[in-house]
Image (cartoon, rainbow over the protein chains, first blue to last red):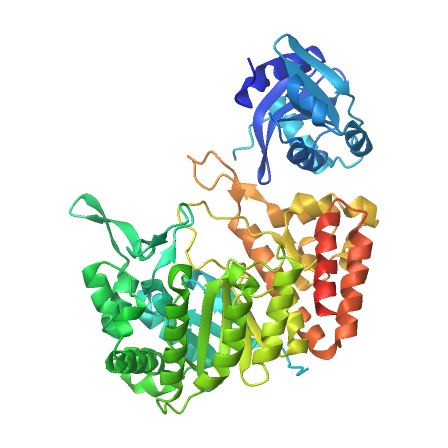
Length: 139
Length: 451
């Protein structure tokens, strides 16, 4: 059965990233005009991850992912396995964005994300604080 | 090619924009106000105009009669022609029930203008070209709309015992606009013919003020050679002194080179005999002053392109930061993502490479991170689920934009076309390695059209 909604990708990706250490997670985290589908923090490794979920439009996902490189150490796009064949993996590698393929049996990292050289502490810091229980950003 | 000193007319969309107009109008060449705003707040509008356009400051003002609002339009959702005037209606609470009725400002305007505007509201269907079938109706409508522009605000003071003695201080508009309607494609010949007849009729009323007309057509008509040739040959015959072009939804940032070239050609043709303005233009149109365009108009934070059908039911859009080098508005993170590639590491670098206006220098004082203040967000109410730009951030963006637009106009006036082309090329070159490379490439399209 193909995925019909982006939302269906969330649970497998959330579980997958949790297993990778990003145990503190927020969904639909606002970042300017965007909403980051999944933002996670690994307390052990003190690193953050942002994931943009898409069913098909991978170029749009990359555009958003680039923006998220401002607020997260590692950024991935996640698409159903059936959709990843069309993706230009070389372009992803160049921009440091990772790729996660999602299927019914779980997730697999096809391209590892590089640590973002664009990350800004003034964005990253408050998110970590929020995930660690320091507030939800609602003043 | 007739070079013109480009003018910028600021369009005030609501009284919430008064602060920008009052503080910065001295930097611009005029202010324009729609008749619907006047009818919504006649006293406040008259007072503002006495302040900025009265004998002391004498900033020219333009009074848009907004007659197109009573015509037919294309529903953006369905693509079908609508004649039900729904776009000038709103949901209103009456006797505990919600009813959809005409907005008070448009009803008052129609009542003041008389036939066929008031009759259109009575019958609840849009004005059609057939409503002006007889010369008598046409003449009376043109006279009424001219009188409205010349006297409405003065009468507001004259009819108020407290302000009557100041009625003569209310300034007259710079020009009188002929009535105009959207050239709806299914009846385009009829609408164009009517627009031209109304322009000619108004020009020959002997008003003692220059007559201008507005040409309001769909954006794709810039690809309609027959239509453009008709404009170039027929508008000069009307006797108007100026024409304001409004190609609905025409966006100079995304337009094809062919459409931009068509606009340039139209400006060149028309400016041989009349003043030509772009009613909603960007930097590209400012540069068209080198080919005869007399000026542009836009809002204080938006309005470099406009659809005749107002956007309804959407949340307040974010006022984005105007990036002077790329001549367009972009989100804060989109710009921030380019800093490293451009070697921007400090506020000083920012002033050199991005902007050194008073607003930017006031916001970014110690740390580049302060640039985020242009996009600052909050939950606007305790119930809000989405973050929205703070009013302070929106204000910063608007003031920064207006200061830059003023600088652009001054620079364009003293530059020659080669300077403008070179500036576009060098900006495209510098930004091509950033994540905004596609936006930078747009400058080369402008450059090719202006060459």
